[in-house]
Image (cartoon, rainbow over all chains, first blue to last red):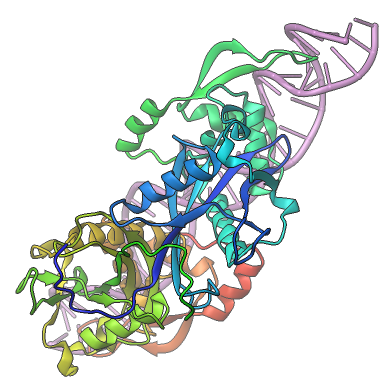
Length: 231
Length: 231
DNA sequence: TCAAAAGTGTTCGCCCTACACCCATGA
DNA sequence: TCATGGGTGTAGGGCGAACACTTTTGA
């Protein structure tokens, strides 16, 4: 790196923080880390950490996620950059926040030894959060609510094969309102991006539902033709 | 500031860049600055600069805008944060991009002496841009196209009082398609957020159109009641 | 009186909504 | 056979799309 800076002023520190969402039976869940260092020692916080000089922002977010929670290869999207002056009591820290969506069943967080301080919390039963993480989490929640309706990102919260009831439940939890079963099915199936498999659910004490999967290829093709996903 | 950093690694530099949009008779315009320093000396670039240690990101964006273009008190919103490793040939620079909307008629850029290197360009006739600013501009353009349809931000590009034809033209330019005059008027007027004034346009060589204004108070009230703007 | 843009109404089809019953399966 | 959720059809209303003519004004 050349030493030809125009400005030699003090620089803010730069971090990433990640809001990881998942879907429980009944709740939207978020992954939190219990801090083992000051400040806010013992309090819960979003996973995250400093951006290294030789990694992109998304790389930093993925690295921190893996280190702190064991999660990898998951859907990740930039959320917003928080630059308030008093975010961190130690010094000026600007953080680029990301949000991630995972399928709870497919990722065993507890298996990772580094993740012993990580845990899932229901959005309705959150602990007090360190720093301004409550605000970041709220921003992420609003973004998810808004975006899930016009981008097919909800599928990231489900296993590869899912029932239409599961999909409907997902929207009901995120949008926080009930949907009509018949209308929901008609709408989803009329878009051709959710394809029937010939498998059915297992181990249920009643008629087993058919499993479907999201057909990304068809979605991409239709999108190029001007198709617009919307629930 | 206490000197208790956990990490003393090299830090990326942090800047802000701003995409300022305005509306000409026929085109969407963007404000660019001709660089007078290396790198990219003489090339056009987005206004922007380094974030000071004691100012928020938005404050930095507003300060740079005023210094470089003379624009102030305008609509400004965070766009995206760009953190690629090779954005700046000198060193690692992360930039928080904003976009701004201004009413061309209301802001005389040329009046500001510091803005002698600033100029408006039609989006259809852009010069080559410094750094990764072409990508930032493209991202801003996509955001504007997407957002203008479901948030009443388009009014920021018009004078306080405007004709429905002007408003329609705005949407036609940004969305890049023609709209039906009758349907457009019906839709806009059926939402009660655009109010008739009793003034008419001046100095036109034909029947003068009535002037309208955006009623933010009513918009906020309706929004609280669940109303959702959409064109 | 002409040119140029302002301003207005109606029909049609589609999609969203609301709503109730039969079906398949495991216990 | 019963309990549980899976799965389907239809009618009505509202909204967006398509479309053409009259009005007003200044030149």
